[in-house]
Length: 183
Image: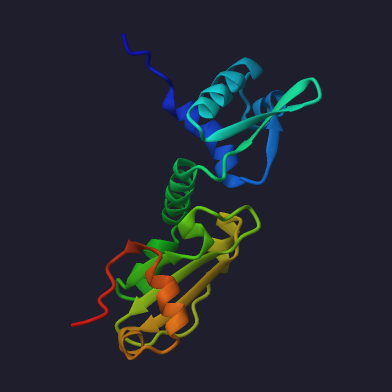
């Protein structure tokens, strides 16, 4: 018989570590922050530890849990979480509408799942024509992270201006549209 697990609650517990991967929490602290019982918190923390997403360490007579930042599964979930948050805050839709459906690439530490609560989120936007500065302050506030948005026209991309930036961005994750380097 397959035991059904409330994935939503497990995801909520994991989200605590996705939002602040540098943090570590006692069971009671995690329960308080998530507004769940300590028993429920312990159950999900133990499950996430068994899955390799968290690490458990002794802190005196108590146990503390922290993100397993070396786990590729944790990094993958961190990236997915970041992309979901970008969509939920509205920045992707805003850029699509304002810039006529450009290619939007998440790059840098957020694209590798290595960012933490102090990291900025880097977006590389490839547009049909040159775009001016874009005010994303309201979205940064919603996310709780600084947003660094770089726009580049397709012509500038093909001409190879700023090759280091282009290489870094093209090793990121396309969140919207597609990047056409060659025609």
